[in-house]
Length: 483
Image 1 (cartoon, rainbow, N blue to C red):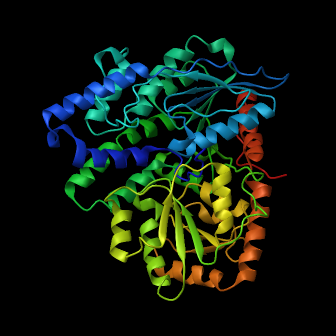
Image 2: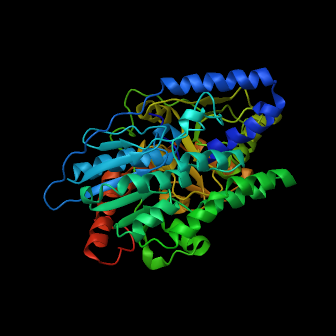
Image 3: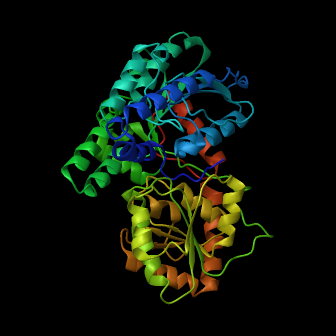
């Protein structure tokens, strides 16, 4: 499983593919024959794809709840939402709750005991034919028409279409569940379920208004700004919906403050339950040997918010005075900002990109690194930070968003620097590379912090406490406690 996604949805990756498609692969730049052949191949491929069978959920233990867990795009390889879904549902089942996941494609990877119902969709962004034209026979509902129309207009229609589909599915299953837990869809169908009387908890990892703002700041032409605004058009729908939902869970106090300020969700409707990591997988491995000068960064998408270009500028300065190399877990966009920076700075010989690794392989790669870096301009949480810390690796992170809340006090459990500041990164990285005792101390303290606060068991306990409050008619807890 490719699990280290800090960007807790796949929206930025899809938007990146859309820009590539517009510039290189759209019908206007292809011959008519190529367009027809590609469309025919896509139609033929659709006929070979089958919808996964229903998997019944393990029954709830006495006094526990029956949960309908909703996710419009479920696969762990497509963003942090899929990681969250897999691990949280497993631990909720281990607590005795019954959980059935209703997911759109790409389909989720789930553990034994977790139920599954596939929510059919057009899957317009699938590999190897993203932004495809579906066959007429694939259109079976109004939601399909909406999803395709929004894509043609340059927008992202999956959350809207999923919400319309799931409302119809759950209309016939009210007696099967005690509560709905929606993972960041926030479409009109979700609001309708709430108004029909369903108890509902919404997870909102961070306000995507921040993603839009940073993307607009880095859009250097009128058309890029227009395209960015169009792509993020779904935010109007999500803001309109989430303001009317009764209970919203987010993953950090920083996100709670930003959601309140930018999406006008009252603080009394917000609670904080952090996400987690499996410390039995993300741990130090005795047979893994550190590689001198090895640095590591994990980035789920090639967008300015992830801060990879400032890090590369820091690496270019560092290599002048020392032998280093950088492992990037992720795939930069061909001809994108990161690829251009690699060429401009002459770093292709010391920067290696890796994708498709399992959690254990990722943990072993962390073990080879002398330190890990989280250079993001903003994070609502940060899975890469806690994965590295859980592996006992010293972390250099920025103060962007919730990172100080996750990493802890600078100098005690990691080092924190100003975002978008290559010189600050150079200073912090040099400090750690030159001080093995400090690296070891920060690595050990970081792992201890993760085990205490950021495991999936902790996440499940906090989430179950929210279910309990909602179903008993009590106020949401302000945040998770760590007793």
